[in-house]
Every structure is written in C-alpha cells, then in structure tokens.
Length: 141
Image (tube, rainbow, N blue to C red; front, side, top):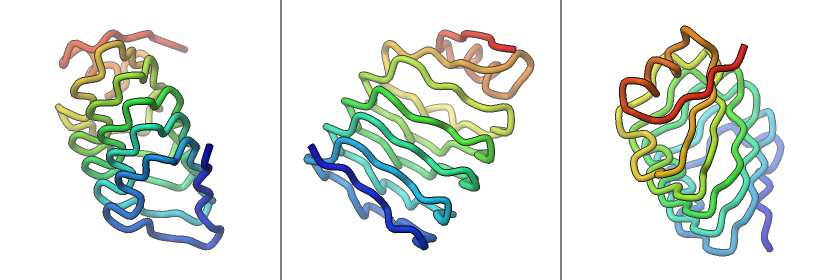
C-alpha cells in the first residue's frame, strides 16, 4: 500500500505528475493546492481513495482518468468545474456527491463509469447534468 501525501505548501500538481503510478492507493491533498494539472493521476489503476482540499476550484481534463479501482472521492464545496474525461474509466466508482457550486461538467467527464450514481441537491447543475447524460441521480436536501 502506498499513500501519496502531497506536501503542505504545494500549490500546483503538474500535468501527468503521478500518472501511471500503479502503487498508489490513497491521495491526500493539503489546503495549499490550488491547481491539479491535466492527467495528474491518470492511469493510477490501484488508486482507491482521494481526499481533495477545500479551496480547489477546478478538476482538469483526464485528472483521474483510468483510476479503475477508485471507490471514494470527496468533492470540495469550492469546486466549480469538472473537466473532460476527468473520471473516465473509474469503473469502481459507485457514487459521487457533487456540491451545488459546480456550474460546469463536461459531457464525457464520467464516461465508462457503468455503476455511477450522482448525488446532488435538487435544482443544481449536477442534478440537471445527470439527467441530461443519463447517469442515475439521487437527490439530497
């Protein structure tokens, strides 16, 4: 088992920085992270859990694409955008709670996530997105 603990003070995780790390199972982000690059964790097939930090506003293209063992991720309330193919191929992801702040989700952000249910508040962008692209939706209050 390998944890990736991003050092406190890190502001940017560069494009493809941890891509294809097959030992990584858990990632913890410090509060200092403001930007996560394109494909930063793509192909981390054994990655199971990701704890994103408050303050993060955007998940870029392919950031967790191919993380086929991913079962748990927290989306911070500060996030407003989920990029193209951000979670493509996260086949073990069963549920993702998307906060009301999120105002942009690319059409193929959750491509090839066959058992995914989006959890969102009624009337939010995430709820409308789930209905538009045909992903099961669970409404919370």
